Length: 396
Image (cartoon, rainbow, N blue to C red; front, side, top):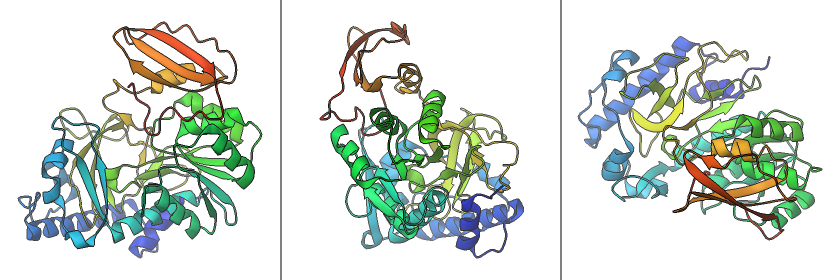
């Protein structure tokens, strides 16, 4: 079986002819100690940590960094002057203080992300073809722009669909551009495939939200190929892990990221056990994070990957706090073939589900969900309708 393209990327990035697990861990320790030295010299947020460690085992003795730390002390985590910051990504949707969470990136941080994207996309994007990108295009070197750069590196053509377009506009893009590959979230892809069953799409990389098993199975059936899930977050530079041709988990970019799985008390867990993902961004130039608790729930696969890669693999990733996630409801409602999209709102009376489909819909017998009565309001989809969610699917 063909080895993951990410392994070749790691070898190229690090100037190595081959990579064993021991080589990788030696590299991680070297980069971690270089980072600790930078932090000590800078005297910022992590200035009180040890100057160096003798083994990766000692990492578990270091304190965690939390989302609240990012909000309160984020400026002290930046190791570059403002003149060297190329991009700042801001999130204000959660947290207890109301303070925005900002992640800073240098030009080199962004370049490395593009390089990783290109490695992951090389598994499915072919030279001379077109790739439809349904991700945010938010100005100079935003997420959509970075993906476009990666597609261009592969000598393919990016079709910049973005988010927020109507279904009519998206269907016109499909018809006029005839892209072979798709990059975006799973539900928008499923919606397009249901609205236009006969189209040019053959392969897809999905990211930015959970893809329930039933939805993944239908998308793969309609495409005639396996999906390539990707995992990333702002804190890890948007690019974290991607699927290989074995389709058994997502390989981590471990030359740049030291990852751990811990239980709720923060105790390290062995491969195969589910827990919270903790990351140390070894290669981040502008704003490295040490033992950051992501709030994401996953596990490492215990057995080796059939592709032969030495890189750890993540299983499906979801949020630790599942209270607002729609993954469970998506699995049930999208089992009805005519559903195109819907949104949910928590009201004084219960859960209101409002959506549209291609025909009059008969819902599965879900009259109560998580203790709330459920009310449905459905109508036929129109060309001027838009996706109900432009980001992660949550109860409003």
